[in-house]
Length: 79
Image (cartoon, rainbow, N blue to C red; front, side, top):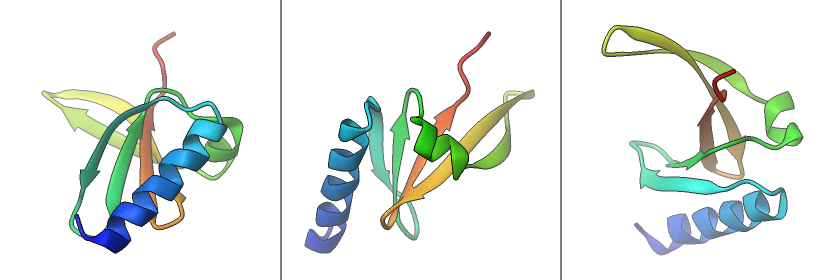
């Protein structure tokens, strides 16, 4: 990761930690870093885009929102 991307990820990680989000994984995608979290805070939930994901033939709902120049991704917990 370049120095600029590392700085962007660190700022996003700090903000997510302040909001009480637990970071599961950080990876570099084609255009921007993607941070996976376990549960989203209300601010992220309000600004999220819903994704219909298919994995091994099973469909599930995923969500994504931007924090700075990073994408934050999570799944709705099972009821």
